[in-house]
Length: 273
Image (tube, rainbow, N blue to C red; front, side, top):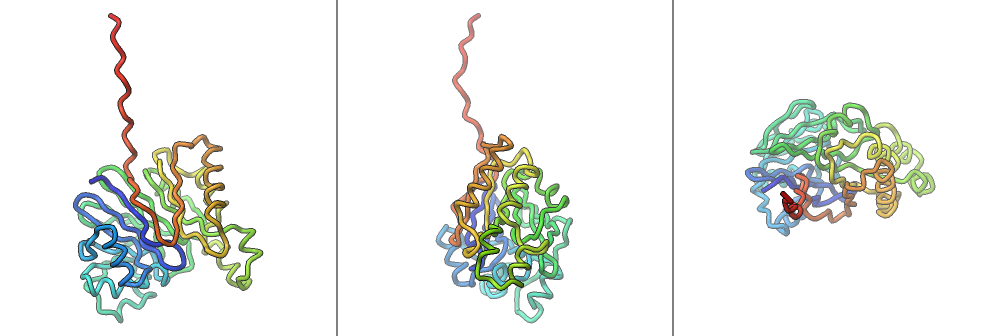
């Protein structure tokens, strides 16, 4: 089995991504309730108890709501930063294990190598992840307020990238949210706008990337077609029309292969001499 992933849930209703390869299977985030998370895993043929670990990006409930209960029921280890452990109050929970991870230091889950990357967000110690197996890698980042050099460099070699495209600035300004919440979302420790992602795709996306998944869309301040148009326009400007763009819904996505598809061999040319 090659490295592949599928989003099980995305957005404020709960985030979770399943990543697997031969000999390993992990979740990134567990923001769905434990029963719903187990049901979504089982619906795609995955035994919840077969997970090697759940990696948590940060403590906000839409990313870790079901983590402790799921871990306790199915005996799956949790992994996250010290800041996430403290802010999520995991010390008060009966969980099988919590392994501390540190930004910049890789850990193993079976045959997967998982590298946490520090990101700017209004959480205790948030991270993104680069997951690697057999020379191919997935970059996974939700909830970050701006794109910095550390993030861009870490994701530059990835074959596939999942990144949030949370809001459209015009919709956010005109929307019904309180001004304080609008400021938080648009701040440098809030979320990425469609324009932010467009600039990343045009200027920061690595040459190896063949698949981009845009996630964590706001239901109130964005629209999937706006997200797609912004992303595909930015890619086209750089001549990157080979990059496939997938927009997540709250129900997630199908399976996406991280390793690029191998081109089919063309017809052999007949030798003239």
